[in-house]
Length: 405
Image (cartoon, rainbow, N blue to C red; front, side, top):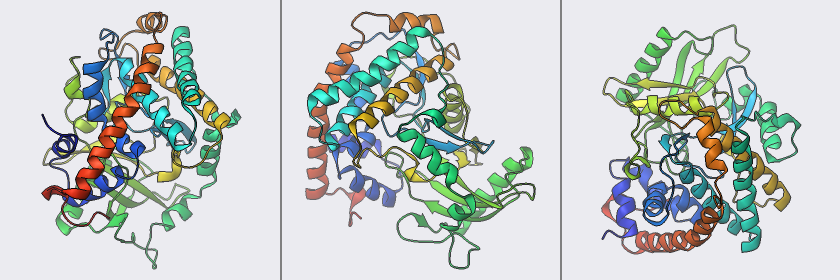
């Protein structure tokens, strides 16, 4: 039987070695970061340790946790708060979402040093809100400009952020090209640079947009935790003269198969490529999409998801201190967003219809087993985290050999 470390190395096989080193270093920092990057371990345990109704199916981001919600600017230039990472998007039982989110709430509560009883009440805050919204069978479009939670501060922060200043923070001293450093922005070899330029130009030649005139510069982008090891690029683009913003930043992220698929026996639609899957699922679930959100296929059959780049701090930070009442309010809205996404995508390409979701939400004893499983699973997360951390410190495998920065 493979050890936890071996399972993790096998899952990450084929990713960029230098980025894997960074990923493993981040994973070994704390249990929450480890949990974020190991959804494959979680789902393996879930399907073997939890009895659930497999007939109910929803479109999901495939990796629901408290940091998978964030702000983004849409093409109408307004700011929204929603689920924003669909790399593992798939058709799956809603229990997958609810259980993973519950575990993340327990882990976030540990970071805040709240006791188990408090953490349990927070888990039920999310679960009860989800259940209540689903029972009504009606999507709730939350106007975060009227709320008093952490989301409103994130939205106001992004609304106040001036795009020229944000772009400038990524430029070199001459303010003509993207800067290069050893941590977040790395050089791109000439061959890959030309390939990216060619395919992005080809996309916009077919899909005309005032957001795009030409590419000014490209760098390799280091960002995220679970996605580290994938090809990811930041593009500095010049817009058409009709735009208020002269320059924008694009994020171009390699698409790989969903980590949840090996643990599902639910038939999935046939997609032309993984980027098409990711963008389609997010389109089903989200109310509004990020600006320039589209799939791009390269001539080597690899595919990438393109979108306007957002700052990493535009997500809820569970590792920083937060007041209990504020976190509770946040979880209420996250529960509403999750249920609304399931309802919004109901009946699309094999997902359950709204009436089925309503019946599911009215099941007796629906939530208690989920909370109990999540509370008990925390021990497994800590055990796996400890085993993995000791492994990379004592016997660093060839795939991550050298210093972990």
